[in-house]
Length: 449
Ligand SMILES: [Mg+2]
Image (cartoon, rainbow, N blue to C red):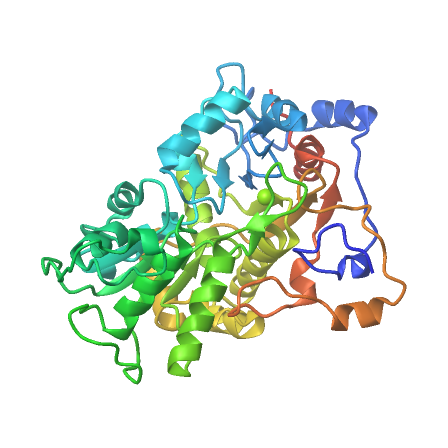
């Protein structure tokens, strides 16, 4: 059986047939003539007021590696007015996490040719702003890039890096013989007790980070003591970005942070016999990320004095297991919430999706946390749109035996997320992001001036 995308999974033939929806120019003209009444509540008759917001994935949708996908340019010309202002609320939701939001916003502004602010960017670590109970604790951070700056930016005030641990405890990092201390060495005990561990993304030296994170977990943050393999529960662990693999310029996908987490989870379990537990998992497809995105969409509408509530969200992505699964899971939450207006809906969604690990301290706690931090969502739906410019390939070979195929499905989602075929079925499949924007404008009967 041949798979063009072995890093996702093989159930795609069970999806409904692709239906790329093309706009009919005659239909657009008709819409232009008839829509003025619909937007009669707009602040200006020339500027229709949107009731929907857009969530764009970046890699595979707008860019491929460092190359702009040409359809992105076309799409964004439709999304800004003559003054370069967005005509609908737009956020960019990426699982990347090795830079600041401002850096990503600057890159996007440059590559797309439209002004984008940091308030429009959601990195995998952005929801950490909501975890205020950890902001004053001493946290160990793992990742690459400006991790100390990122930690400071999301609110942590007392941060220790892996390199700081290495320098204070030179006998701990022993895998690379060339990095072992040349002379007899003893710990330089000047680090405070570590109280939590935050995993931003895949590090450069995996063996060093795996060793030191395990050391911190098994010593309860006090590296002067030996491992206590029966001491459970371990320190709180927060992880951003669960992507097992990601697609860059190479023909085949590359290790992502999810692969690093697989290593950490298995080493911990092998040593202790018990499962590693996460206080929170964030980044797509975690619901936390979508709550945060929805709040930013609402803020944008407020800033622009668009008075109509944003009721529909559209998430455009190239990855079934992150973009589509996440959008569909959030849609399930919104629909349940709208149907019942019942806070227990969160718990039911979590139970249905097996995403309890994404809920720090249990469903009710996360429920109250994001609701107190972000206020209630105005959206009642989140529709998923899959593009074919990234990891998803509509031309992959169809296995002859689909039912056998699903049994053999290799689930590349995180350990704590259950595979649910309904959640990986996109609302729409389109060729590229320009078609996605056309489709959304058509569905919303939206004609920008
Ligand atoms: Mg992508």
